[in-house]
Length: 206
Image (cartoon, rainbow, N blue to C red; front, side, top):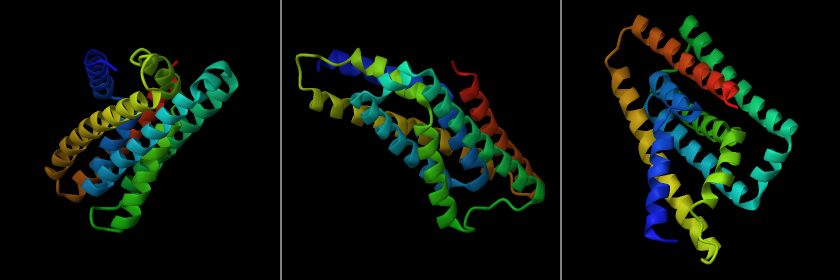
């Protein structure tokens, strides 16, 4: 793989990650409502899901999804419903004042966020199809496929980790400005709205 190809792939990853999608909205929602640990665990989950998607794409699963409209829609709507459920639960907790604050049940919140990030990333069939078409443009057929797969996967993982963490840090700092119970409740509503927004975005993506 040439340096030019790698650099072009890196720039493309940066641009694509900066555009808010379901993963970004999920991370921001977790940062607003559950704090730093949950947000970073959510980022870690998204990275795991992203690696899984890239590996599946290299193995040709993306081609199967692209060829089967029914399977594509089934996976897509599973992701839509999952994000919508997370958003509804977050808003419900904010309304009743039972949403968790940082430091309360931190282990459960952290692992739950890791799971949410992973599932949200994996249940995005558009990403699988996209990777199938996208990665092929940067692979040199004459070079080592395994080596190029490793380089692209590591590069994508680093880019996503840095940018999603930046989104999380910004949201965390914005959250810390508000300390009153009413403000925390509004933050809970905002976090749930972000999750519902991610669900809507996934649902309207063709």
